[in-house]
Length: 292
Image (cartoon, rainbow, N blue to C red):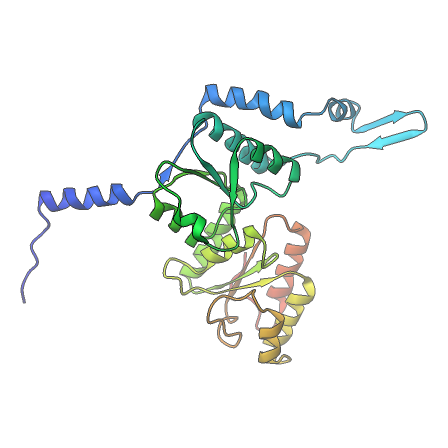
């Protein structure tokens, strides 16, 4: 048997150069001086003296016969605030560059209108169209707070774009979970809307590194009850595929891929509902082999 010689220093350098060339161009725009300017602009657009006054009055204010109550949890969450800050910062850091955004930064018409006025152009989030082919190394692309599917990120890397990733940290925690499921041969049951940007991004990670993992997206408790009933032999396979059309991983077979499952969620879903869904999955005779 012929022994393969170890790579020479020159070959090692060539490999290293290739790795550097294909390494994604993630850009950090969170610079102190930039963020100070961003803070002023964001407060100008989204701060309200009325809201501040109501908060100062313990979230209740009375004017004549009218009483105004403000929810205890009011306004943008941390992940959304961060995404907006990074979008504004991107325009400050790249004043003359073409800046694009995959879909919408968040589902808020006013925020997206402000970004459009800043010259930030939305790209399709449902499919990779010809607009992505026109992107180049001088272009900046914002990944929204929801994240983006793996194939979208791969395309941006292929085009050599500069990427500002605003994906919420809580979303990335879910991604780590479904990747772990895929690695262990566990099917991800994702509580969410199958057509939502975040769920599509999470589902793409649930396929795992080898793209052989599986997932099932369920929206309601009725959906999960149907799945549990199917596991107990009370369902029809053809009917199953009709009910969950567009919510299944490629090649999904309910007779094979529900033997060991783990629960994950779209982070905008009600926490109490996800917990109840998980309880029902774990309570069946053939319920989850593992769940989280």
